[in-house]
Length: 377
Image 1 (cartoon, rainbow, N blue to C red):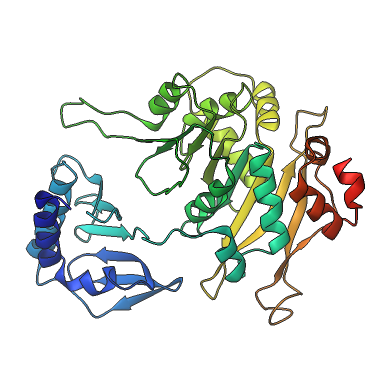
Image 2: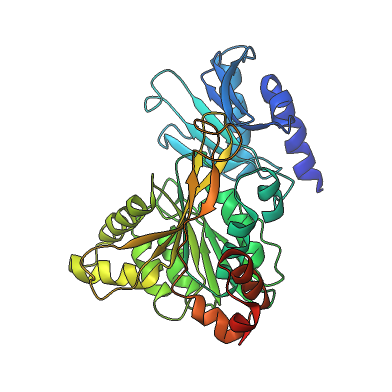
């Protein structure tokens, strides 16, 4: 650790003293400061108010100023919304008055030092072993995948876990607003959007990074989250030689995810008939993985849905491969449910059969009762 980072860490620990115990608590995933005297934390998936507080608004502002200085930014009254990070990589969002009407607000999304793997999600009952195998095989097959869910549902964590199935030899370009993904492959090019300074200089958007990435010979492109016009660029990249790309979006279900991607693509400013856009989206996206946060705070995959490539391109046709059955699993009806196979086979199964994929053969034999010799042959 460099001396400069060490100094920043010490000064931040001093200025953020009221919330340091929560930042150091591995059970806490987010710290939400709604003014100097109102602090909430998310612990084990549940949000609760804590007794901690800053001495006064000036103390909170001093902490915010120190955070922005570490990120090379300024706590400027003319910039009401500021993205930054702590020395450990935790993501910070700061909102200032008058946009924050009750005073300066800070949300700290903690950066986990432990990188979850798919097998740990299985152990946590976030998905079944068969569903995990199916997703890993789909990623290996370079299917384009969207992880959909609400705020705090674990979309980025799931995307990170799925990325472990990408072959080591692939050149992966990762584009994010704030760095969160922790890919373990050797050939990863991480890119991060940057806001412009107060004079409008030096900024680069997700969309500009995406366009630049296409000229960097990526095998796969991962966009941390689609929020705007970059959705159109991603859709076109998926259909023009960049198979195996992945991203996340905020949506309540697979169909909502497609409709939201459609809306964001229309925000690009490119004139395109809706039918043509919808046709491209159908061609681009292969699977949508829906993740939800349940009442007990746990994160579960609720659907793994295939986007069907039909001749009818004026409407989306979806088919669940796996679905969360709330009548099964621990607790029965009203419990956490169980992610089960719907009885439907994916249309791209023949591609894996042609490759002679051993994992696919074993999954097919176990789940779909297809003889291994038939699948391998």
